[in-house]
Length: 146
View (tube, rainbow, N blue to C red):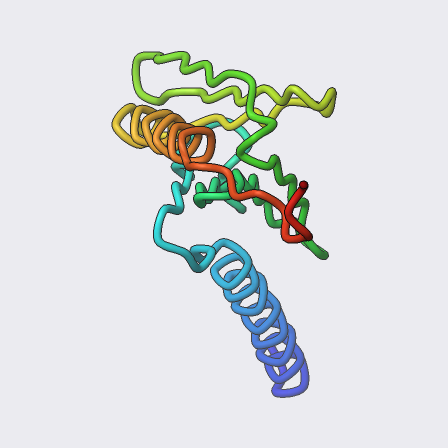
């Protein structure tokens, strides 16, 4: 093999290695954890989560389903007042969570969460709904009726 062919193979190999490293870095960056206290990330070993695992953030005011994609992301938010029900399907290895909305929007479907994470999501949603509906309502500001 000549020196020219050897040099071309080295350059091609270096190019493939750089592209591979960039793809790995992009998958790592796009799959990082969403900031927040109560964020539940699906396992990469589950269906549909190999490259970019889906995440669910439960806050006192809403449930946010976050799925990164190659370019951009898909994010669905349901206000705590509009969460109608939470269904947990437990399989052999992972659990699936279905959060239905009373507002008519499509439900949040999450695959590949650990059983304890799925149960914790449901507990948090119920806790935040209880706090939301159990909090005393304040009267709107305005003049007092006579």
